[in-house]
Length: 196
Image 1 (cartoon, rainbow, N blue to C red):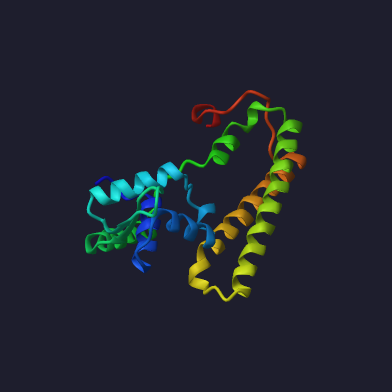
Image 2 (image 1 turned 135 degrees about the vertical axis):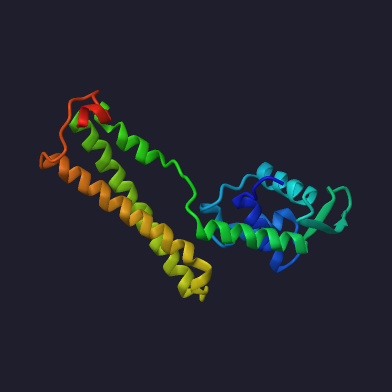
């Protein structure tokens, strides 16, 4: 099997709690707010179940049919699935994975825009970040009030920290442009040779 995907890891985590049908897994992901961290489509979820079954990380424990409805298959995690999930989780927690955030790329090319346009776009982003941060904070607070354990929403702390950092940086860049600390000619980007 290739590397276990994040969706695959989520499926194994939920199946480690109890055997479930793919639809139930999707519902649990929504209930736990994980669908905001993991892209879950119907097709991707069923494909993941197929891949995990072929790799013997999960197994069928029950197949039923009610009337003319399609078969309903319930899956459980295997011992091998538990080991692979733990191994992948250790890897994800302990290493830096290369990520290619689109905002970083946009900042790298920002000088293609006139300064005023760049400021307008960054200010718009700041408004969206403020709203996202408020929403994430409200969601986290609501889960805490419902008695959800802190360990079960630690990813929301990570999300909030990233949103705050993104917002702070975006505001700082706007301020740097206004104060003349960032200046450029539209369409130009210094190369390493030019910068020396």
